[in-house]
View 1 (cartoon, rainbow, N blue to C red):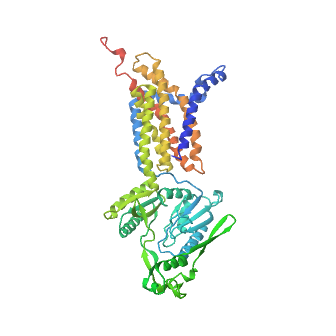
View 2 (view 1 turned 180 degrees about the vertical axis):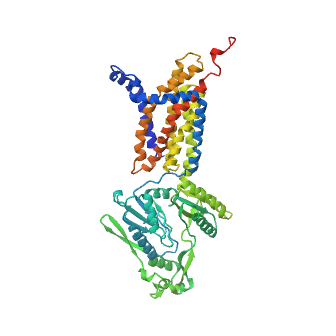
View 3 (view 1 turned 30 degrees about the vertical axis):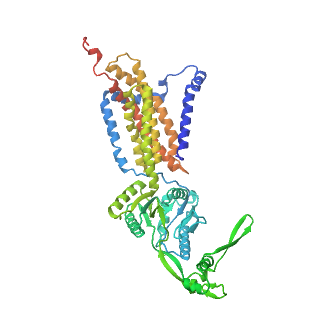
Length: 576
C-alpha cells in the first residue's frame, strides 16, 4: 500500500483533472484556436493509410463475425501455456546498489574463531574486482533489540559504479561469483539486499526469502524436525542454501556454589554470586564524560584469568576474615550443554529454518518445499510448521488481490451499465476483456517476469484501459446505428457497424501511440525502482497489442451479432 498508493492517487487526480478540463477548458480553446478551413480527416496521409489498411479487415469481420469470435477465444486459450510457466513472487528484487552477506555458523563458535572467519570472508569478498569496500560484524549490535547470536555474521558490501564493472557483468552474475568464491565449511551463505532484509526481519524475523518455523513443546523433537526440514530443503530445485537453527551445542559455565564450604569461610550465597557477576561478568562502577559522549567504566578480571575452567577455578576471592581463597574452593565450576538460544512464537517454543532462493521464483520453490516437507518429514503430535519470510507477504498480497480484482471488475461493470443503460452491452464489454489481457500475459512470459503485486497492478490498469477502449468503440457503433432507421434490417446494422468502426481508426491509433510512447521508456529504463515500474508497464504494453485488436475487430463482430435482427423485417409476412 505504501508503495502503490502514491501511484494510484496521482493517476486518479490526473484523470479527474483531465476530465474536468476536457469538458470546460478544451471546448473554449477549440472555439478560439480552431479557425479557418478545416481539412477533412482523410486529407491526412497517415489517416488515409490506416483507413485503407483497416477497411478490408473490417469487411472480412462483418462477413464472418462468428469466426472472429472463435479466433479471439482460441487466442485467449493460448494464454494457458504462459500462465502455467509464469512464476510468482511478492515483489521483484530491487537493485539497492549494495549487498548484505549474512551467513550463519553452527553454535559453539568462540569469539576468536568468529573473528577469524569474519576476516576470511571479508578477504574473499574483496577479491572480486567490482567490490569497493567490505565491512562485517559478528554477533549482535549494542542494543537490546538485536537478538543475533555470535554465529550470525553481517557483512555490508559496497560496489563500484556500474561503468567500472567488467563487460557483461550483472548484479545476478556478481552474486553467483561471490557465492562461488566465499565457500567456507560450516557457513551457509545468504546474499540479500540491505534495506529489504531489514524490512523482512522487522516484520517476520526471517532474514532469508523463505523461513520455516517449527513450533512445539519438546526441544529435542523440534531440533530433529528442523534438521529434517533442512535436509529436505537442500534437495528442492532453486534452493541455494538452507540452515536450521540448532537447539543443542550451546556451552554454559555452571557455577554450583558449595554452601557448606562457603559458610566455613564466612561467605554466603549472595557474596559468591556478587563476585561471579562482578569479577567475571563485569560491573559498572562509573562513567567518563568526553565532550557530549558518556562512556561506562566497567571492572572485571582480565581475559587471560577467566578464559578457561582452570582459570575460573583459580580466581582469587577475599573472605571477610582477610583470607585469600579461590573460586574453586567454594564452588564447583563446570561446562554444561544447552540450547544456544530459545525462541517463542505465539507462546510456544520454536526454531527456524532459513532457506535462500536463487535462480527460481519464490512461489514455485515454496510449493515444491511444502510438498516435499509434507511427504518426507514426520511430525510429532503437537508440532506445527509455518512458512514465513517474503512468502508470508506473498500470501497476504494474493488474499488481498482476491478481493481487489473482483471488486475492480464489479465497479467497471456498474459504470458500464450506468453509461449504456443496457445489461447486454455492459456484459459485452466485460466478456471481451479477457482477450485484452492476452497480450499482457504473453509479454510477461517473453520478458521472463514473474507474477507479483507489481504485475497485478499493471493488469488492473490494463483492464481499465481496455474497458475504456471498448466504451469508446461501442459509443461510435451506437451513434452510427442511431442514424439509421428506427427498425434497421441486417444490411443496415452491418453498414452502421462498419461505418462506426472506420471512424474509430484515427483516435484508436492516437491513443495506442500515446500510451506506448509513455510506457516504453519505463519498460526499457534502468536505475533505482526500475524493476518494479517495468513490471507495471509490461502488461500495459503487451495489452496495447491485444486491446486495440479487441476493440477494432472483436467488439464490432460481437455487437453485430447482438444487434442484427433474427429475421429481416422487410421479408416478414403482412400479418405480422
